[in-house]
Length: 568
Image (tube, rainbow, N blue to C red; front, side):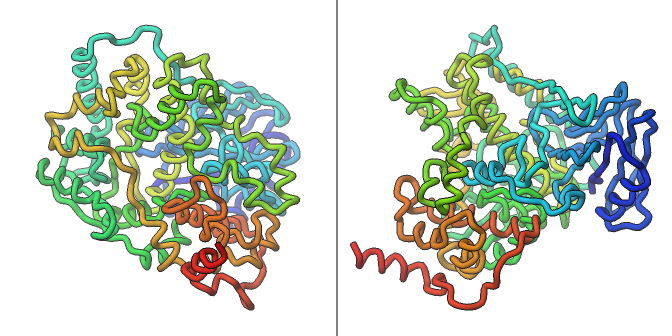
């Protein structure tokens, strides 16, 4: 189990600040390490369910590694020349937060610790709006006013509590591209093997786990571990026969590699039971429907292994399938604003603001530009080629702000460390030397990766058309999870909250939002809204009104669809 931490730096009284930490951790005898810096004071407390020994360098006072490697840290706190340095690696695997209160900078590895430091925390309007646009809160914002997140790849250096500078790592296209495809394939094979070798050096003697979706990335990781002689157990999700059976491809891979495969059955009933635990584990609101199934996957794996490998990051490195629509749009609609073309690829509520927010709240968010949260990722300065530009954006946005931090938090909550071979800086920088056509050849995405691993895996797995993970949110939300939708999206509650329109759930079900919000997107958006409501009440502690009394959502979804059909 990884430890977490909370600390402070600035001008104040150590005894008073240490007492605040003790209240945050809930332990009367919380040990706080104090660092004497002259007039500036600094302290940090490590939080763990068991006693931990912290290894620190000369300037390093706190750090976390998602993978469990002491020499490969993902988030860190340093003291150098009386300056406070808060930093994260470029893939964004472990979050790090800070808040300024008077002349003290508080920092913590989990948002919930800082919520206890602030008196009367409020929702950040910009952070909340960002969540509705992306399904995650864009850094450096958090969903809480005045609490901020250190962006991935950034070191933030405080010389005084009032001022700071930043040093930022930038993903950039290499000036020299690899022209020989066969040479690129050989280099990639060597790189992949060396990455996995580095990640298996300190493995325990018992088997390790692999999350095997049946897709190319996780299958490649499993194959590499088998080649390295590692005993592994694979885990895959099973949503039932009536949904697209991804587990069948995972089964083909497991048989090909001769490894045991555990199918984790996921039903609406199980989702309902794990819903609150998942939201607490994530710490931040993440509105992607795969989070609870992944929590259940971690829960099952944790009963047998302590280290889990995954294939997260492969889409970002090799131009995964989600890039194809935006590439087509860029080719055929060159006159349009590219940033405005990119925003709809998140398939959330950007562009629907007037239809989903109450009038007063809508006037407030009109002054907030969602474009500014992605413009740096799409900056032509660093990548001139379209594929590289999209890969940079995917690494900075969908990877670093969504996929990787949620995977780490879910693993940590279940006592696992998580290793992601595609989150390797040397490998990632090498991919920026590949010409675009090596990644997308005709309709074949990840072409170079497929060529590199085609002899390691069954051809029907390597060359099949990519699909997203088929989480049946639409069915769940309109059936087994309808009681949760009814509770959390109660029109009276939404009206009192003052953000969403009161009958938003009915509006969505009846298809009145139009555009992309139809068919399977209905379930995705209902889920997005429900997760926010659960988070704001259970994590932030916002008050809510009673659910008793009349609630129009007592009527089933089919009723509201039928009523709309009758009207039309």
